[in-house]
Image 1 (cartoon, rainbow, N blue to C red):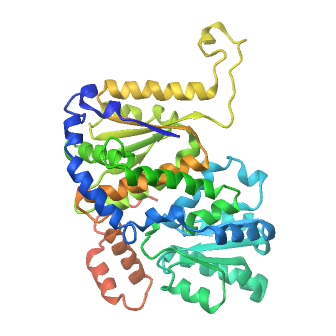
Image 2: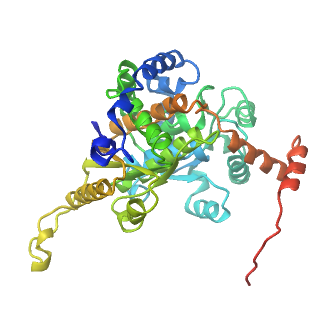
Image 3: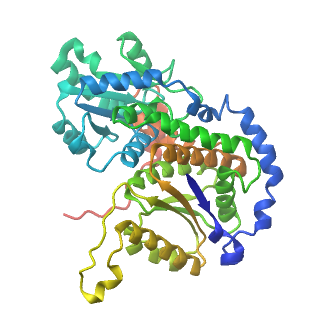
Length: 448
């Protein structure tokens, strides 16, 4: 169950300088009806991510079962949309000590940092390891670099049996990895052609590693289906949670100057959900001078660091709290404590955490900082599935508000192209010349 409280975003609570008038919100009703119709027609094309909750997951479940039976380590090799969703599902839905208490142990190689790479290699037994290489394009530099090193190690240790230790997740037809998988008869999954990396967590990209680690992926998809049903049926702004979140953030950004979107869960299990959200929001909407900068804060930790800025710094933020009503574990403070601390006696940690949220929420409201709260009755696969789909649809709908394409990332591609040029990739000679014309080291300070 999910509830959305947007009381403290509205002008009747925090004033018209920072808050949204209800008339402003409702003025989008005709736009919403028109856009809703467009979205329903686009579900076979650019909005194909909306069909993922209805996919057949038999192959994913069977493959996950085989991995659990044959391997002690499962390692995802991917970056961005090919890793953040995996990490998010794992950290949200498994316990903090998963790798200490369960097999197969789960790791992610999501960067070309050699020390992190080495640390993961040191922890695993290569002969008992399965590697899932994930990249939509099949040519992502960081992923391919890590894969090639792993491939060399596997061949050296296992000979031709290396193929049994690899699973490829990539484009159904194009790219180096698709060709490699087909030519070497390696088990593979296809990322749907119309689904970009940051919208792919509900495909085999995110679901395989979740299933390997014992997460109920059918419940994740059931939650996503529920949210899709709501968002498909409801056209009214105040009844469609995805449209509501999108329009509130758009109005806060364009008409109230709130250029920063803070997400602040009061549960550390949702820390990586914010990392996933940051890519989704930033990469989808940061175009043509538009978009909000997503910022991560964790309650109650960041009450002691960032809240000072949020309350008394620039008035450029809208904050989303995520509250969890029921935790899997809880601990009570004893009653036999010093008199000065009696106000804590008998209270649980979860009670304190949620009262910290309420205190911070009211403090921000007092300072006229717009804030909304998403409440989960508990963290479970069903609710996480709803939350994922909610933010995917809110992000995609926002593209219509800003009149930009939320499914491309041209500025990211430019950086990739310069990297290819620097690495000497054939066909990128002109990019190398362009790089040389731009890159300068004119002002430097060297400290020995």
